[in-house]
Image (tube, rainbow, N blue to C red; front, side, top):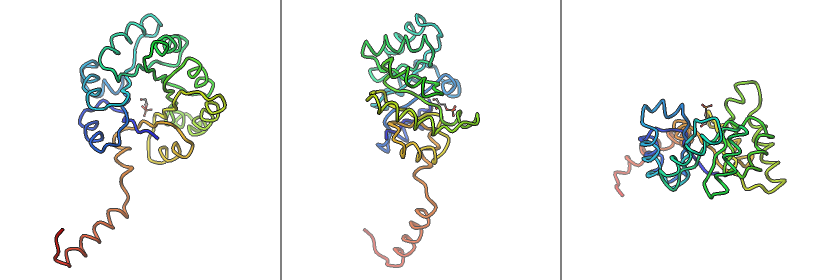
Length: 216
Ligand code: G3P
C-alpha cells in the first residue's frame, strides 16, 4: 500500500520524505488555508520534495472553470495530480484531463456508485473519505470493501486512495482490504512507527549494553 501525506506543511513533508516511505502528498483547500501559504508556491515546493503524485484541488464548480484551473496547476510540476470533486462537472473534467495524460484524483467520494462513475471517467485515483463516513454513522471500511470488489470485478485501473484517515486502525483495515493508497495526516503516519514495547525494549537493551562497557 502506498503512503501519501495529507498535508501542506513543508516541514512534515520533508521529515516523512526523509524516511523513504512517502509515496505522495494530498492537499485540499482546507489544508492550504491551514498552512497559511500561497497555493501555487507551496504546491511547487511540495512537488520538488516528493517524486510521487501531489494532489492539488480545483475550486471552480463548472467544467470550463475546472479546466482553466487545471491548466494553471498542471504547469507547476510534472507530478501534479489534479483533484476534482465527484460531481458531473468534476467527472467531465476528469475524463478530459486523463484522456490527455494528466493524473486526476476524484475526491469527496461517499458511495461505491460514485467510485464506479469515477473509474468509468478514467480517474487515476478515487478518494473515499473514511473518517467523515464514520462521523455520519456509516462504516467507512464497508465503502472501501465495496469499491475494491467492484474495481476488481471489472479490472478498473483506478487506484483506491483511502482518505480522511484518522488513526492507525483505519490504516490497518485499509491494508487488510487492499486499498492501493492511503493518505493520512503526518501525526497518524508517525504514530504507525510507535509501540510502547519497542520503546521499552530499546530501553532494556541499552541498559544491558551499558553494563558490558563495550562500544561498536
Ligand atoms: O484530503 C481529504 C481528506 O483526507 C480529508 O480528511 O480528516 O478532513 O475528513 P478529513
